[in-house]
Image (cartoon, rainbow, N blue to C red; front, side, top):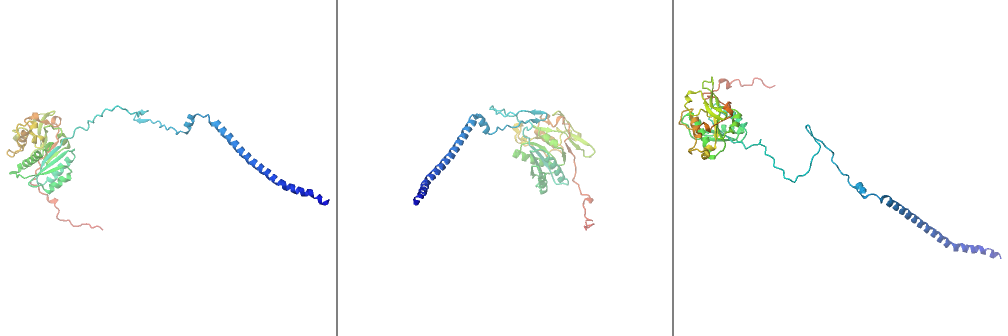
Length: 367
């Protein structure tokens, strides 16, 4: 019947609805198989790459790899040390276990220098400041140690102390309290005050009587340090007439004293012909007589009871017995290193032209 013609169509509709789940299942299976296939492909290529990497790098030498990844070895550049005309091609940095021998001490350093004890009596007069400044500047050039003992009578003046301070020389300002009976004895008492100071304080060194009116060379002071006991040298001086020079002092054969220079007839009776600034001696003779075998222990002092000009020889006779105990300074005593000028300033007055009392007004004003 006609109604049955459309039955197949109805069956087909029912059939299509029945096959839809199967289609979805098939699509789902296909989808799932595609994901697995992709995963398998990824794993497959990963394994191929891993095996290839092991095959390529697995046979490399470990030492080579260690060298490739190790820090490079830093080698210092080759340097030639040129010392003048010599070329040092290699330098040894080895450490020696053996103790090295101590280096020899430089002989140029030598033993310490002896101290010089310079004794200078001074008094108030026209050229006093000039004399002290001149002598102070010379002593300033002498290598230390050096002590300058300056002796004044009655009182230590401020002016003298100021001059000594400005010289920059180590000094001791001593006062002689004993008043001389005559002007010639002034220096005798002042030197004795210095000798007493040296003996009381046991000042060690070489004693030298340096009058402030004499002229000295630096070489003389440096030569005094070679004295062991008593040293002497010639002194040049102007005669009282100021028209000729006189030489007074030892005649030497090397350092041995074999005679004396003298031109003054009045002094030929002296035992030793030496000027007061023409000798020096070891200070320990004053405070250590046993060291030098002195038979007596009386203080060594200059005498004010002898005639003028004999203070030197009577003093030296207390220090040494004869010329065999003396030392000539510098070979042959052939050099003059100090002068005694005998400058007399007792009647010194300022010339009129030195004092300006007039014409001191302003003659030309500043515009």
